[in-house]
Structure formats: structure tokens, C-alpha cells
Length: 565
Image (tube, rainbow, N blue to C red; front, side, top):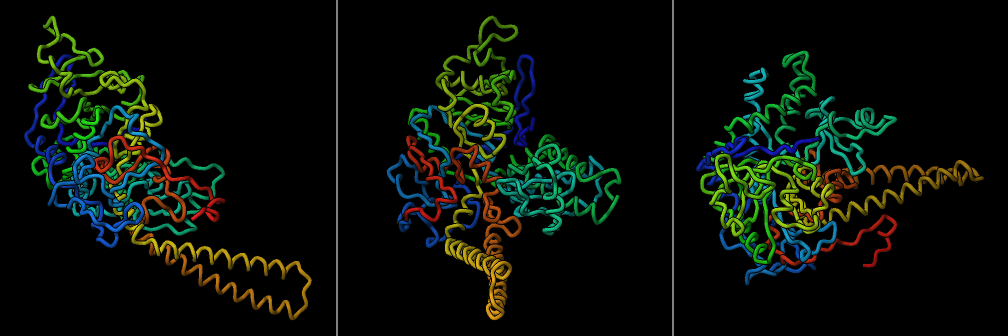
């Protein structure tokens, strides 16, 4: 079973007690979570779109100002007097499967990169530097690594690491490799086909030979892996003659885990949370609106951390959940309750208070807990359903950022309704709008290329099989030469325009949700497992809590040319 790679950031040192233990709560932890939940608005994934590039439902002109990225004015919440207006396309919630919010009785959230949006340029750089130090000082790697730097924009979600060959791959939804690099060297088409195309059996591209970059926490380790591959190729044996690419990846993973466990990362972030965490003023109003609408709210996170200042916005909080294992009904993990005042852990009987050692009755401090948030560590989804009185899994909407740890398992195993947070999406859709004319031109070039190729095939067939005189054959040969020249020109123009268009999104990997003309593997997973997806969790605040989300109509290839306009 794969374990979700969430860090134990700002760790509260939850111990594993047999009866109870004290949880030291660092003051910096309180500042960190408060910064994530109640500070200024979140830094956007890309550059803010200027007024001319905003789009709204029905392509209306923008008349309503949006909340500023620096928290300059109050955010617009749907339930407020300013709410209910058209929404910037970068903040839309997109629907894959119909979801009527009236059927949802409980809304749950992940913490890392969902409610707490880290700044990759600072947070991931900090994790990268800590990982480098662990490789050098704990695993014996050369000291040259200490001079390396991290380009936080280079890697993207949805990539696949070939641990055995040292390659980084981007695939389409059919698992065909479309872009491939060995370290930082791009593989030629021949190398790509020779490695991944000429096989009798299709590769699954899954563990143990491959690693999926399906969370933003994995970007730094993917970049470091590429650096080590290049370093090993240029300096054979300098790491160790016995260390191959797969072993280097294993070492990177061990160094990353140690970086998150040894406490230095937590302490650094806790000292200056605003440097590492984006702020979003809409999160608290969003939670209030959901609760005012009659729904319960809960938090399930792998992080062992808590801040007691914002528990009023949740009914149940479960930390140290060990997702995705948490989502299995047969999970027998013990559930401990955290007492608010002392921070002590107490045993429970499947969530119900029980006498502790040396006491004949449940502790008095549990009185009235049904009126406030209850905080737990560990447990399983069965405990959560009981605590929230959930009668059907389809009554739960869970919001997270990790396609595997948060979305796939909760959807596939339980049947929860799901919403994926894809912070990169805001910039992606803004660019799609900006480049809409370029994309139309690409389609025209592709159609022109197909048209010319069809004519070439017709002329070649006539020359080979039809009885034509010498003069006619000469004319057809001249026409064929002209068509071949046109095809070459159109093909070159199309490829160049397509390359330039993709590089607008990312200089190396192109559009997040596309690989050429096909949906990327990441997009395919989003489509399969996320009922809804959006750029940030607080976009829920822009919609009615009773909204009926409906998907756009699906089209198959045979329908596109006859779709009514």
C-alpha cells in the first residue's frame, strides 16, 4: 500500500500512549495555522489576469471587483450582500459528475495544500535544503550537493519517475509516454520509442519501478532526483559504484522523510509562518457559511498538529489519520481523543468517552462536547461516520489536494463525493482564455494538414493503380511534389505553433491537463475520481451551499463536427 507523502509539519509531538500523554503545543504552531486560516488572501498560482483577460459565465464584461491578492478589501462570500455575482474563471468550480449540495450533510477538508496553502518558492525550497543536508551528513553523499539550488517552477504534478532508468516522464491518458527526460536531458523520439514503445506487454508505470508525482510535496524530491541522475552520469562512481538510480531515489525519499520528522522544518516554519504559508481571508467565512447552512464540517489530516483557536469552525478534527489507509472500513487503528484544555490524549471506545486508568467514570471535562469540536488522533473512517452520524457515504463531500491520498481512495473505496484542489488551475485557465485564438489557429492548421495528406494519398494511389497516360502521370507527379512541399510547410508551422503554445504554460512540460491533443494522465485521474475540481478551497465560498453542480455535456469524436452552435 502506498503511503501518502504528507509532512508532519509544525508537529505537536503527539506520542503513542497506552493510556494518555501530554501534547506540547508550540506557540509558533498557533501562529502558523492562524496564518493559514485567517490572514490575508491567498497568493495566486500565477500572475493575476488583467481586466481584459477575465471571463465570466456568458463572457460578460467584468463589473464586479474581486478580492485583492493582498487582502486589501473584504472577500466576497456568496452569503454576503455583495455575493452572488459572476465569478472570475480562475475561481470557478468545475464539475465532472453531477453533485447536488442539498444531498450533502457533511463537508470535510484536508489540511496541507488545501486549507493551508504553502508557498512552494519558500516552503519547498526549505524542504529541499533540508533533504540535501540529510543526504550529505546522514547518507554520505558528496559535499558538492550543498552548493546545489532548487528551481521550484521546473517540475509539475502528474509526472512519473522511472526509478530504474533515471527518467522523468509525462504521459497521456492512455499511458503513452509523450515527453521524457533523462535527468535534465530530453530523450529523442527514437530513445523514447525504443525504451517505452517497443514492448510486447504494456507497462503499468506504477510502483515499485515508478514513482508518481501526484502532490506538490513531491516536486522538490523529483527535482533532486533529476539532479542526482545528471551528477551520477557526469561523475561515475562518485556517489558509489553500488548506488544505481533506483537506490538514489530511495535515499532521496529517506532524506525527505527525515527532513519532515526531525523537527527542524517544523520549527523554521513556525517561527515565520507568513513566509511559508499563503493567507486566505475567505476560508473562515466559507466554513461559517457551510455550518450556517446546516451541514457539519470536519478535518481529516495526516499531520499531527492542531491549533485550538479555530476549532469552533469544525465538528470533528482527526489528526495523524494515516491516509489513505484511514479510508478502509476494516482499518482497526485506535482512536484517541484530545482534551482541549490540557492537550492530553485519552483512550476512547470507538469515539465514545471511557474511563481512564485510575478513574471509575469518564472525565468530567467531556461534558458538553457535543456542542463544540471534538479532536481525535488516529482511528478510521468508521469512527468518523459514527461521530458525525453519517448514514450514507454519498452524503459526504471531501476536499483535498492529493489525487491519491485524498481523492482516489475516498471516492473509489467509500463512494464519498470529492473535490480536488489544483492550485495550478487558476493560471492554467487564465492562459487558456488568453490563448483561445491561438488554439483555434492550431485546429485549423491540423485540419489543413489532414486535408493535404488525404490529397497526397489520393494522388499516390492513382499513380500506382490507375491507367493514366504519360502526360497525365507527369502532371500528377508535379502535383504530388507540390503537395509534399505544402505538407512539410504546414507540418512545420503546426508543430512550431503547438510547441510555442504549450511552452506558454510550462517551458518543459507544457499544459498541466494536456499532452499534445490528449488529456494528460493527471487530467484523466482528475476526471475519473474528482466530482469537482477547482483552484483553491475557498472558491466554495463563492457559490450557494445548496448549489446543484452539473457537468457539461460529454462529446465523442463523431459528434464534434455536428454539434449545434
